[in-house]
Length: 180
Image (cartoon, rainbow, N blue to C red; front, side, top):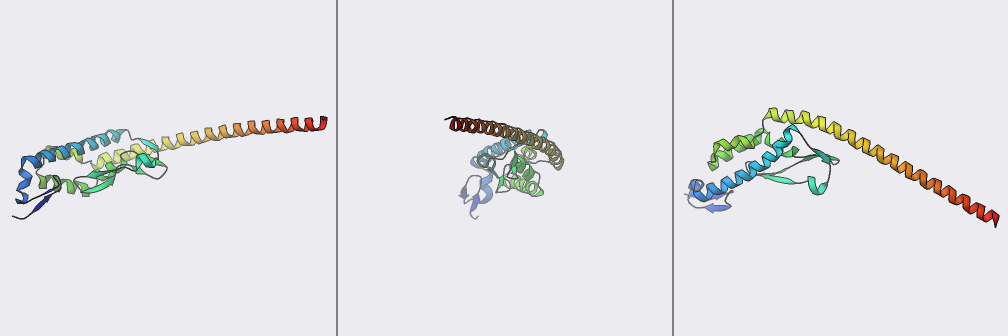
């Protein structure tokens, strides 16, 4: 039996792959899977009602670790102006690579097969999400345009008041200079 590194327990076992059947590994595995399922549940809530926000680099550039694929994935999708919350996570969960990696992860770690479907997003769910995102993006852009128009009107009104004030001051100064 050779050395076997377990990424779940973050340790090397010298009894080969027999480590994965142990209580320590199985309890750590359950903990990891439950944490992972919570992230996916949070993202699944946005499938029917996607959320779009104005881009904020401190909030929207977050990543998450996909235990199944063994890689870091961006949580949100952004174009630099606006962000679709959980879009990156949902896109990743729907890829064939993630599905394949999930099956491999479950097989290698002898995880509970009933939980496997909770970390995979179907192609149909992704397509419905994309349709909903398109609607929400359109609404968001319209709201942003309206906000910009309101701000422009506010700036014009302020500029007009300043101009009127300046003209009245100039008028008073000329009258004061001519009358003295």
